[in-house]
Image 1 (cartoon, rainbow, N blue to C red):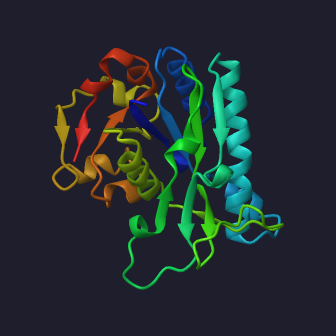
Image 2 (cartoon, one colour; image 1 turned 45 degrees about the vertical axis):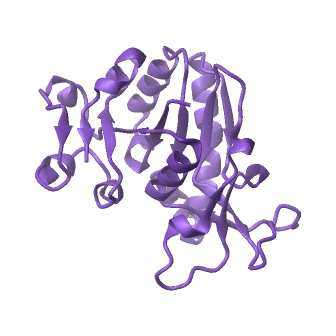
Length: 230
């Protein structure tokens, strides 16, 4: 896999964007890995009286299915899974004060394999390991953990040796496409601009990434030319 593409909260609540993204992905000969979290759908579930954590989990699972169907409609074959499937992405049950997410997350790369030419669609729902390191895969009630997208991306990039992380602008219409952007942007110096296009959790992380729109993402041979944010 040559890249990780992130669909965040704002992206997932924008139907026009999602259809454009699926069409762009269909033009890729060697599709990468697509990861996602929840969306505004979580808040709609909350209105039914469900607790937030449960609502977010339900939203993520539903979005995984909806995205798979959307990709299929665009002619994109996808292998959809959650992190807890096959114990591919696991997190320690106990998090001590000062322990980083990266010390808690385990990626089993061999369980993320998929047929050539297909997209791997992975949600941020990880499985939870017992304190003795055992998996809960055989439990009648599985415990899951919603991972922050930047931390999931970081762990996947490290274990799968993927160098390019791609995020998508929150801009509406063609505004972002018309902008003349430099080859690189700074999270500190260009903060006010980036806040209009990127979620705060990625801006506050130390992860560098490339900024894209569906139109530019569709040009697979030019992905390396996307503006770099660091």
